[in-house]
Length: 293
Image 1 (tube, rainbow, N blue to C red):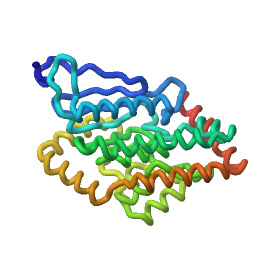
Image 2: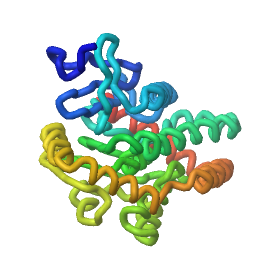
Image 3: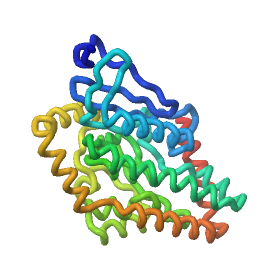
Image 4: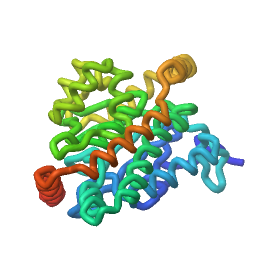
């Protein structure tokens, strides 16, 4: 059987709808690209969640190996998450769907959606990183759940133009898919709580100084920087990956606690006031306007 490294040319892109997967055999890396839809904000729509569930299930069933029909599979040592949107990495939860669920009083559907988001973050943090080093390459805005997903990576690399924020408090809610736990692992509980309560948008440079993100590179050079980072990391990959696994054992994500946060989040959503819903509507329209630029 032919090995993937012996094949000519790049591996074909594997499309899963809203997510593209591409394997770079030279660095044993899988690049996961979130695909934007024209005139739609890049958020965690149910279609995007479907694609991630399919990608993670394939990764797990293949034992962390990239498999082509006529090639011997190769282990995936690095998984890089990025976006093809010119402005956003990901703006987080589907606010339009939030609004629809709240208006019709369907809080069971709202909980089910939030649990799917939690599952995605938990699988990216846990199952994938058992075998691979995960990297979030942020080249635009990462808000809400988009920021949380980036934080669930082993490393966050951001271009200088990137911005980050947890805006949920602006419409009376709070981050519910791991922000408290993930930020606390990086900067401590007090600083994490302050970030979650403020609703502020931060520059990449500011978060790098705080210790929230790992590397900042010039705008437009994110992919090159990430490939250079992988090359450097790979020189001592077994040792560094073992340290990453040890860190997860010492500071794991507690699934039961994260589920309790979702329950609290749904309960607070039931209590949103009309003024909160007006702010939510404004944010939905702002996202729509940004997606048309």
